[in-house]
Length: 200
Image 1 (cartoon, rainbow, N blue to C red):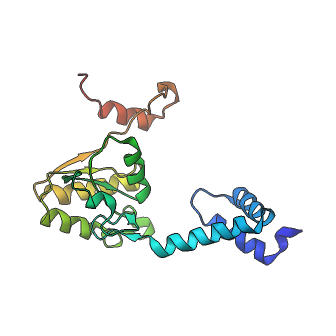
Image 2 (image 1 turned 90 degrees about the vertical axis):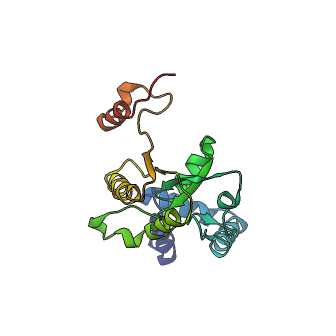
Image 3 (image 1 turned 135 degrees about the vertical axis):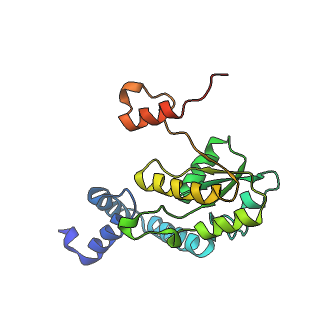
């Protein structure tokens, strides 16, 4: 059988290391690459190597970029007095797609998790605090995930930032647009009620 081949097993295992990829999906991806024309596998390989060579962290916000500073930090039209803190680059990308936010970002590259040995020194918290002390920041929006680790991180940061006299806000978590209340879990509904806003 093909999957007893060590090279294929290594390929499957490499795909399994990616977030959200289980064993069956990893096997499907491996089979696809092995069945596809060689040029397709070559294109994927070259794209990965090129991205790894060209992409780095922005020296200001720690987001992934090919230029330093990144396009958001270099854009004078963005509100430099407002910083949105996210756990990972994917969080900043998601907010950018919404098109409503015009401030700047700071990417932590993770969340506090004592169980996994991730403390403040493993994240980009020191760089955030330096930005807040050196720049004229008016508000920090904490947009960490609605997980136990995200909440711990938000609480930790809010205490540190409030001590600098800077306003700290937390993004609202609640029912998604188009979603019925009967499909939302208890925690989501609780956040939605607690984060309610006045009707204009």
